[in-house]
Length: 478
Image 1 (spheres, rainbow, N blue to C red):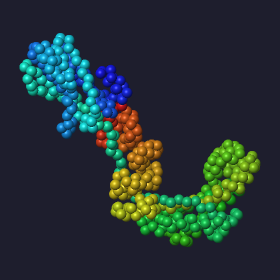
Image 2 (image 1 turned 180 degrees about the vertical axis):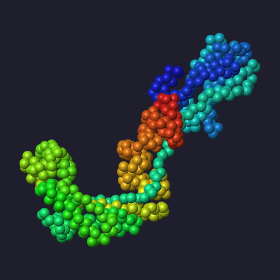
Image 3 (image 1 turned 90 degrees about the vertical axis):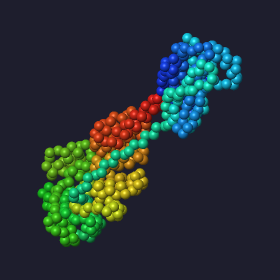
Image 4 (image 1 turned 90 degrees about the horizontal axis):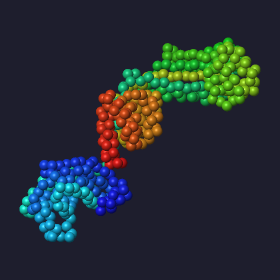
């Protein structure tokens, strides 16, 4: 029987419980290495019953019965062990039916019973208690049995169910925003006059007006400044390019001022005579021949005019290409509208703004509207993802978006957000969640412990859960 059970346990992969040692009858009997093993379909009880110290007369006997008790009164009684004195032993041999399940032994100085019993696993046994009922009789009559708890069985699968630690963003005292754009206005050669209908100017000027109108027509915002910075390309003399960049910037400012009658105090202009930075960026990101040589000239200490001339003379073919394909793009006007958005306090109002102009909301307002949705719902998650799009470099926005990604099982996405989340306890805790939710509990614990040490309750709870799962898995050899 023992060999059969060993083979069965190897085949089914048993989940072993703790083994305990217990004395009964004031030490007369020792129950050693009591353990219960579970397969998918069976339980096996193992122990050694050491009765070498048991002293009893020929008409006496001792009974031990392992019993499994369920949470709602369910009971399973394993085969009892009867250890009898000489007379009772032979009496039982003569009078016990062949189909009896009792295990009969005669007491003696060397008696050690290797007990092993298998039973079919029932769902109620998942969380149950193993005890032994024992008693002695000197007359062969019924005896009172005394129960003694041995093991608490707990095969209930552990589920890691953490709380997520979001951070409530601080409210912005002043909600300052800006809109930026670049216009490529065509001017007649060497002139600074602006002709709205000249070449591509209708489209470029329309883009400027659209940007201004988006802000100007929003009753929730107040424009605080409008700035223009003009750039010229490096060909021609530097002094003439100063004149062109400065004059064309002033002309564009006058155009905007006449259309919108902005307070002159909010209008600001500046200029860059030659956009060498833009040229360098283009060359560096291109596959143009002699790229490194051209970059070396751009980065040199030469004055603007000799620098442009050297590129032209050293790399005439590439210079002609740049003059045709890139120099026109270096003649541009960058503009920025700075404005202040009023604060929104009503959730309904915030939802309306979220649908039409999410850039006008603060992180705190977005967090406020998220709390109005069911946690984990699509609307709830979408708000946090909108927040990180509006504030891509904000640590709090990235942390909260990381939590959403973790909840969705998007761990690579969460790690990307956490790279921008800083080292707050909540961020440390979230890094641990990524490990734990992928069943890497040992790797998760240092993160949980660090965050818990900084006072984060969610981390302390998660650490306790992780340790319980680790212990459970070790105990059951998972």
